[in-house]
Length: 355
Image 1 (cartoon, rainbow, N blue to C red):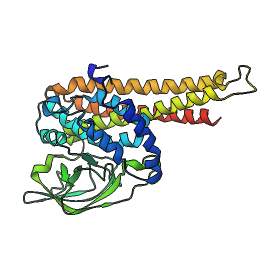
Image 2 (cartoon, one colour):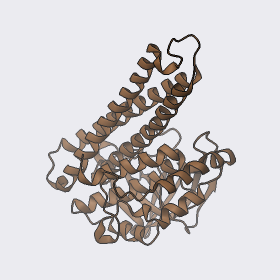
Image 3 (cartoon, rainbow, N blue to C red):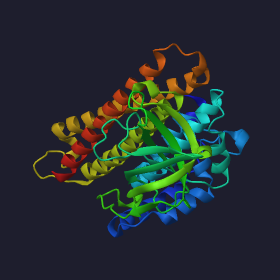
Image 4 (spheres, rainbow, N blue to C red):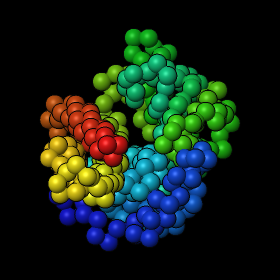
């Protein structure tokens, strides 16, 4: 594990995490955004965790951010999940900078001044996000006019910039994807309060309807070919940061389920078992061991990917042609396996608690 990936000196104190945990049920019950948590995180400087130190941030790399998000998810999963959207933008910008590309340095500068970045990638019917888009981008003087319907807009109440993508199909033979960051005070969009997902309500992942919103060229980060040909370091970095940190959040939830199951088994008495407690039942021990091994396996996959990504990004300019695709498929594979491992662990924990 990289030196920066441990959580010694974490910005997330035990007292903070306890407060987040206490508030989490109320947020979900009331379908309310985690305003109190957000203000605490912002005040502590947590939103600048992966901004390089030279810009005034904490300089954490992907392994450290993933570890911190896992701790946060243990106590307040929705708070971690929504915060993650901001991190995968600032993390990508930081990695571009480390690789010698200053295109998104402005994001790092804005982040230390309090900017909050959200993700506008979710689109109904688009099962190849980032690489294709059902939103349209029309080239006009000085920028683009973007029209589309974006879903899963976590951080809706507080974002100052919505990172989005849309397709410029003015040349049918060579469609392009624009990656841009819409300002909160832009005209030509509206928010539909559509979010009501059990357990994730505090993320306030409402829909954003783009109705010809104008995005100036200065707010367009990249214009790339549609499809896999547009997989530059910016797009690849989104996959790397999002898949790793999402997986870590799900593993944090599994950690919590494991500990609750352990507490339940330790306190559950039995008249039928000679030792008098369910924790000595061999089948319960077997199920619990499977649960722990699932978490361990997912943890190893996430840690390996995060470490390799952090180690190799500075040399991205000299990567072999196949390296980006290696990271792309491995990020998806890692997330699939780690998330399923977390799912199995939580499922087993629920079974153990219910018996």
